[in-house]
Picture (cartoon, rainbow, N blue to C red):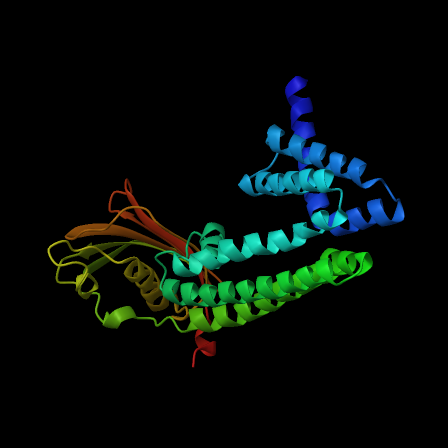
Length: 327
């Protein structure tokens, strides 16, 4: 019961703190201007709440604790100096924090947006479009940095020149609307760019125009095939990867699956979307590998392992453009 109570308390405190962080300007305006709560009492309440959040460790990451520390500091200064302008600095400080965190990654790659992208989609690293994705993410990171500068400047204006109502309306409403517009706009642009990016992946990468191996189909159904491929060092896939230490590139493993799928099932050879990609162990020649391909509509799933199936090398799922849509 005790552990259950602690869990409920942590979840409740986390939700309350998240709500306070989002609605902070509205909450401050309502408490001080509408309800006219004495400033020092309100400051003390902010200090106690922020301190409880910090010491209970209810956040799911360090960001909540950093936010709690910022609120704790602002509440303490407000209590000491007895001026409400101190409390208005929270939105400005958060914009500065985001600007620094995003901006630093532009000079210390990978950039912040690319880090988020690879956390969400593990298949990006090692994929044929990794460099293109990284370039795009860098541009998005720059856009966010510009936004934080402009949004922070507007927040500063409301602190020093705006009324309490203007400060509350902008930082507790307009700022979030602008953030949402950027999120929505970036999402639409990302879908367009991603479609062009994936379609640009050629069916044969880096001039690998010959498999130069021995292939044997060991099992085949209407939409699934299992085959043994014997790879040797003369295979063009190993050219330049690497002298004295040949290894089958990740992009080549994907290309093999797409090539055989097209040959056996008549699927397209242009990739529309990479849904999942995982490379587990390196592939060194000479070697016999087991390639399993399964096709459902335009979705291709593949698995590459040792010929006995004991050691996995890679697996993935991609969506292919139908042959009729490929120019």
